Image (cartoon, rainbow over all chains, first blue to last red; front, side):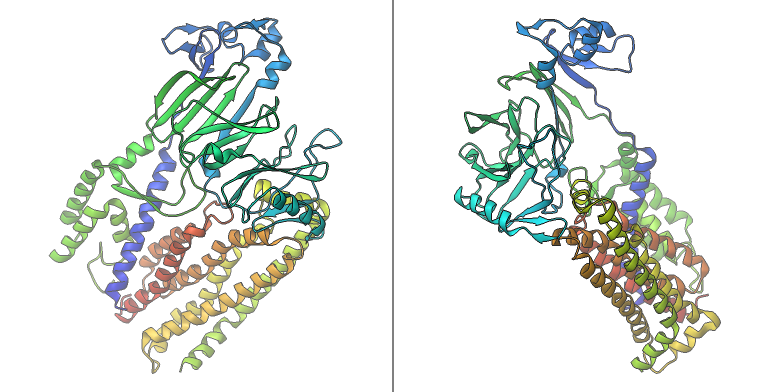
Length: 413
Length: 223
């Protein structure tokens, strides 16, 4: 291969790595994550309120601009601040005619976080199946793990051998209930720090969602039949204190459901939300006795919704556009494009090209002009260097700088 | 002539190769001691669960740098002697085209490294298969793969910097090498590098071509 060809290949390669490394450095030096306000639905004011704990005088502001003091904030958000109200002896007896007791408030409080990285992550393929009805209080770590692909197999950790007897028992139960192998995905909560365990929800090859758990050492397998209502994309388990539902179900059409258990059957109940992109958007739900506070974060901003806990119908909403990030403003002026290898919505690494807008081309023109005027070289070299910088920008300038024959025109150096 | 060059390269690299083999052997022995310790102290269940719940890397973390260090050592042993007292000029006067001589030299180094890496990986996999199921072994392999790959461009980029005839140009060469190799050390879950392997292949390809650029400059008499 000729030296000139290698020179060009090296130039393009160094431009590529500079288009990744320089913006990454610039971002690290100037990045300031946009802070969204904390917004919560007041069960007394019946509207969404902005809470700023940094403001000691008036931490609560309604969307209409009315400000409230800290003591008023506690009273106006009794379902958020019930521990403080209990301590002050100010917890109301009823709200909207519903009797309030601390155990009831605790059992109805829940927090759920969904990150799209969960959908785009490599899966290990091994799962922990806890006993759903343990004899003693608390969750105990089992002595085995299982894989669910072409069949179900339990592997004993101490011996690293398949437990054929237990595997056959579960395989028989799955076959008997009509589970079609190979499995598409299985989702559960392997964290042992929870009050109880509900096993796994697994989508079989036919698109049926099955509930699989272990009760008294025996397999429990049920077809949820949710495929009659939706096309499941993902499931996220949440073992809530009141055992009202199993977790959140995301449909391929952008619909979000909770999977409720009633009368020994599974019922998907939709959340009254606009279409949700489970591959891109983040979801946080803070639920209480009367209302669920839902925030959906997209690349454009964050939407806040209040849903009635009993019916999951929407009662209020508010949208905040994404606060500007100084690092992006700087990048828009310096880099006409840049490469990234990591992404906020995927755990997989791959190169992504980002176009930063038209302003950086002004910087390119200025830099190309300076190079044409001040960097020595033949007319042909100057034209090539300036044109390259005009197209590739600062990344191209650094690539030229890293290789010989840019500043020094002498071929002997 | 190819065999003669290979023999010459073997004479230069045999001590470093032996040292590298000892380093890898030491690492493998330590990895098994470490795994046995984990199973005795933490227990098999907690160790397996650690991989599932926290994605803990279950081997001693020095594996992150070992292939790269070995790659750089082999390259230094092979190319630093060539640059002292202008021996490279004599090598390039052998009855064989210059680029073919360099190809043989580079392939000799890559073959040594691949032999070391593959043998070490096989021994580790064979031993760890007694402790872990195939899913955990695959996760460990995915975690370690970019670090092993880094050893090859590490070797080639070092050759690029060594053969480069001017010190002024060696500095940007080294800088380019460091930034390129950092792509092998991104924080990632096991398996996250799956779609990134073509990019690492591109790094290896460019790193293989780079020493030919330095040779061309050397032959032009640049100093």
